[in-house]
Image 1: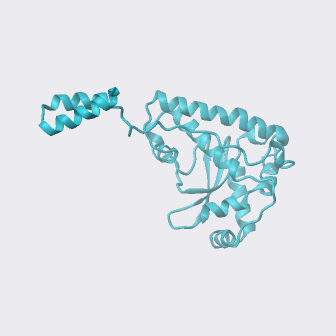
Image 2: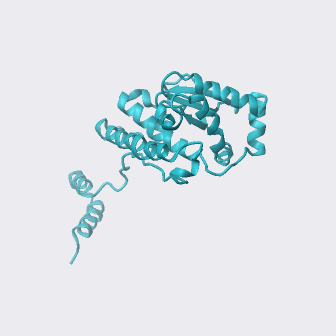
Image 3: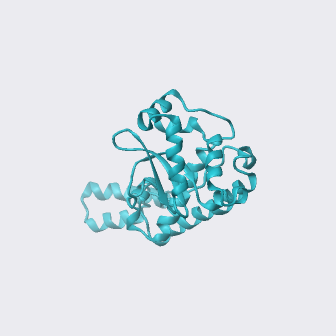
Length: 238
């Protein structure tokens, strides 16, 4: 016995062969499922490549656990809700960020929060690593020395008023630059002053450090260099 699907396909062949009226073809097309319809965009949370305690004493385990399981998961949930509610049809996270000015504050804040944290987790490591020769050369050519780079990056992170991020980005000319963004904005968004490809990021929201460092953001920034994953920085510049 023919299945309904086989019957419809055989009917379509016969219809084309004898050039029967277009109404049958229309009905046939409506009966067939849309196999090429793209699934809606959805953000997901990466699995941490280390345990909560692997970054101690520079970032404490309790802060990492709360940051990852509470703050980040909330951003993931909220942006996926916004994608459905606003019928967002962008095909990738990066495309959504590049066009974020078209969407609501909820979409902007939570798309940034979801993407920024996935990026942030990956540029941390419990194992001491140093910059590769390529990364070092780029930093020296852009900032004069590693010390000057760290000084300028720390200044961007320290002087970011309120909540936000400090970024190392690659600009259109192929040079590294330092910038900062407020709240959950990032350099991929069309709403920021300085756009570019993110290479390294530091979260300076208070929830990223307050349990351990209280109001001493400068100490958090200083110790954060001890857990930077320079291998990931090299990979992003490769």
